[in-house]
Length: 266
Length: 296
Image 1 (cartoon, chains in turn red, green):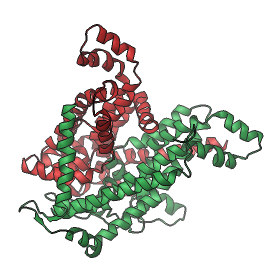
Image 2 (cartoon, one colour; image 1 turned 90 degrees about the vertical axis):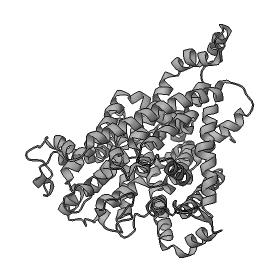
Image 3 (cartoon, each protein chain N blue to C red; image 1 turned 180 degrees about the vertical axis):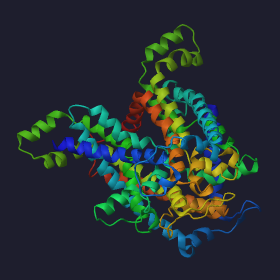
Image 4 (spheres, helix red, strand yellow; image 1 turned 60 degrees about the vertical axis):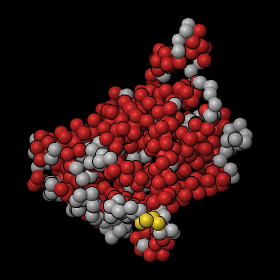
């Protein structure tokens, strides 16, 4: 009984913020300034106004460009590295693995200043390139997760492909990748969400060029820049959260497995 | 392997070396860096008044936020282990808020806790309880950020839930036979068995806390009502520098004022503190962390 009421109390606490955010997002301007909590009438038109008042469509396109390309880049570059670390024997493998782990620990602030200086020099600041291009050189966390999963694949499958004359790249493409689909999906999902949610990176490199703002940057400046009210701000907030939540319901298992993989095996 | 090695050299080795060098220079991006020895570090420790403000705020958010999150994650995780029916539904509900993008979640909380029209203060007033100004009051801005962190407990909770479910049932049965009460079972069976995950959560919590940026930045800008112009952020730390965290100050120095040398020095101090904290926590942990199967 105590458990039940605890669960219900917690559920209300976790869900109420979503509820109030959605309710406010459909209030009229006048209501949003009042103390009323229940919209009367429901003004769904806010969800159209928000696209007219703010370049939300452009922000979304930028965010998708960043998240999509960065995810593709991380997967393309990290899968072969993880494979080499898990299944191939070569000198310095141990050293390289320690380096991967070390880069995971490094606070991003330590490299941020010098990277910024480089990107200023090559005139990339203001564009999305500083966010996308590094992804094609591998991501330590993704390499680590994929390596952990590749280790669990039985060696016999790989060997039988090798006996049939497949080169290592073919073994990777034909045997390892199909078998590791759930792990690859989880890593891809994580990277996509990371980029979708990322604030520091886009703020650092695109702040001065509104044309390339992502949703996160646009939203953070929303209330002050356009002096719009809470109702439109909350409508944009809902639109920003919604894809993530929908993605979660479609890929729930990948999510939960991914989180436990990072936690327990990390 | 080679693209990664190239990337490693380009995006880690060179930038680290360069920022270490910059930290001993005066560098504003326009002219060449010139060597000033330890002056940046001296300025940090003795002259920069906001450095210590930022340190205090960061220590506060770690000292309060990390234990609060760990306790709450264990508590909600334990609640979920007790459910018989509908466990999946509750698990989803508890997990959901952690998915909200930090910028969106922070904006949501700035609205929920705003003193004029926010539902939280309206409820508190109805119950005749004091209604704080939250993000507009230097005393309540950080507690409000802790509330935000607790709302997003889901990812940490899932990790604890997995390890709570791994605790062997026979240990609880043995405790029952010896007449242990509920609290004794938690204290002497559950906590020791999940202690490696607690250590993991504390280390990650401290590292994240030292780099705490997005929520502090967005809350200050949204509640303070000042936007940035041409890369210069105004209104950071609002109200009265109470949300000026270490990484926010580093950002302002480096990318607001373009004090690249000083920002590099701040970053290196952050790095060394992170390393030191992690080592101390790992060292000290042998006394309270219990690894199944004996010594690690």
